[in-house]
Length: 550
Image (cartoon, rainbow, N blue to C red; front, side):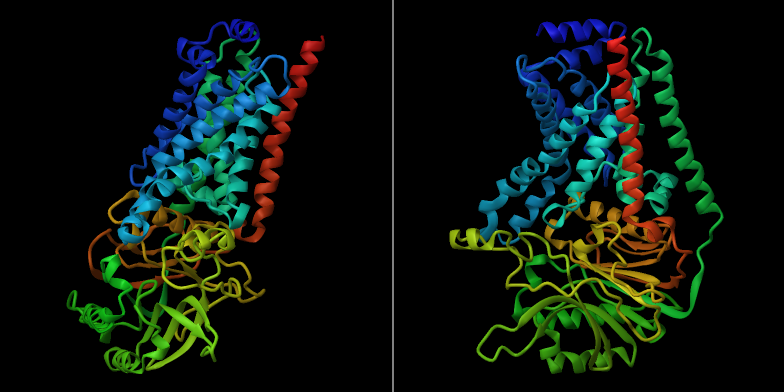
């Protein structure tokens, strides 16, 4: 503790709060990290209190400051101390931001209630490993000056990127989502994508740690770091305001859409005996009159239904196909459905979570989901877990599609389909499209009924909306229980239906915007930005070493 005291002495001029956080030890230190992380979840939907993200990220700077000198006698001591603080901060953040996952375990409580602690506590504890890794990396680059903010950005931003890619990835509630919900600031995603917003958010929301740093010899650098963060924030705001004000929403001619939100209870959707009643409900709701200009299916060109719309394989139900054809009067239907490939022949056919395009009683095009939900649609480490009685939430054994590809539907531009969870992956919305045939529309069909009236559907909607901004493409989003919406290529919500109601949305299809910088450059954008913050952090480390030698 002697070295910690020396470190604190060197920080003369810090206000009492930072000093207390730096000196905190044991469970006090862990509690501070946990509470700061949990408070940061208020920056996420549905609360969207953006300034809340300053609490965990500013606290992170002081927690890593406090790792100096801990674990005396071992070089790993400061790294382990920083990693421990990162784990507790991450655990608080993910627990407060993802507790709603437990709601899915209660849909069929007789089978899955035992897994409630794993969803609510287990997953956050695993995800917290990534902030722990980020804090440890930041500690390797740490310096006593204000450039340590860039060390935090390099470490934590890098670990957020890893979280979005390791074991198929889980880029949910990234720190950058605080900016994605902050009005014009979200337009920065068109330049740098979600992971670029992660880096920007860390620099901006960690800046208060530099502002209060008044140690001798640091004032100029501290003011410089705060000024850099302010310029970054102002730049994002100006770019966002200009992008929104200079670009009005334009519409595709001769396309009239109807989005149907049935609001079916989740436990009803997978009961085959409910199939006929569910289809009757869909057809009646789809033909509902909502005004003089919207008298039903007759007034639309395209009807869209949500993910997993039927408790059966639609292609094997000729009576259902005939009923749809009669009701739709030649209109195009795009719907989520289970799709089977092969008739078995004594073996199981392949089963896909799909989007199908219907014209009359024929299925004329389809797309199979590629990014399956872990523990939802497939079981990770299946050979290990299935013998223990562990199964995935959705009945059946789902197969993975052949990869992202465009979907075609008569009367619509090329479509990039995103089924449920696929909408949370930046840079993958139009991956795999051939040169010259870039999709002009994002279609997100989903079923968030698993999560009830919790923050989950709001968070999912926010991430889907960000894909529209990143790619400069309009989005049609249809959800079983909400939130369904028609979104323009700048992320503006034209029409929407709230969570937990049944209804329809009638609207025109917005035109695509010019291809965004992020859509053209993709992963290279994050690599370059990460290299910049890494370089600034390394420069601070080198300067600190040089000054000590002098």
